[in-house]
Length: 235
Image 1: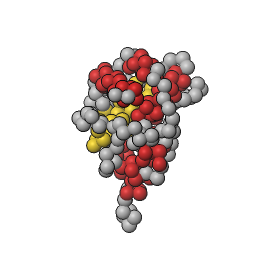
Image 2: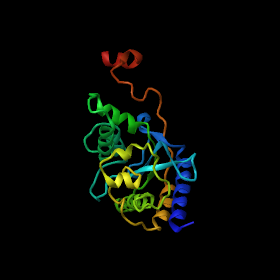
Image 3: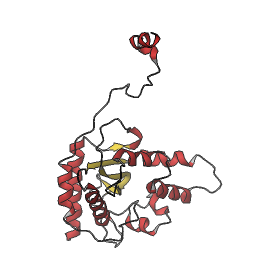
Image 4: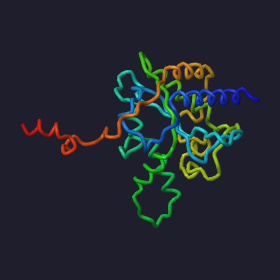
């Protein structure tokens, strides 16, 4: 087994530890802000039908991302995930999926394309790792860059390649089609093995999400369900 193959195996072993620690993968369609997300972090998207070469029951990573890559940035992890979930105009990930869907679609069909993008990304399982603290923007950048470079198939090393029906093959970006990732930056880069130790340390600092009550998002103006509150308002 090559050194790269060993590093990829270690990476997925760490991902399995992360998944166990946080209680499983989530899907954006089922997520909201009130779940106790870490303030800062790195995330990893998977995709149904995209499996690992020698572990066909295990999904492969198809997108690595982060946020707040400068010291002054105030962006939080959920802010970035929400941009991928909704049509905010600031998600490169959505743009890649958008262009691939359009390239694959019939040209004579007019439909709610924004909804299709949200639905496609919303059903993709993902994991996240807490990367916060002083100068954490440097660590987030390092984890993102090296994870992409490690997983990329740009040099055709033949490990965990995309399936023949992967939507990314309809992309106009050679980096996406060749790497097997919804990433362009760092897809052609080399990686430093030491990032795996940093990744392990971050996993040990990642806690499970919290589960709010069923009525966490019920509008407060529905006072008929709160007779005591209604009496206070009437006074």
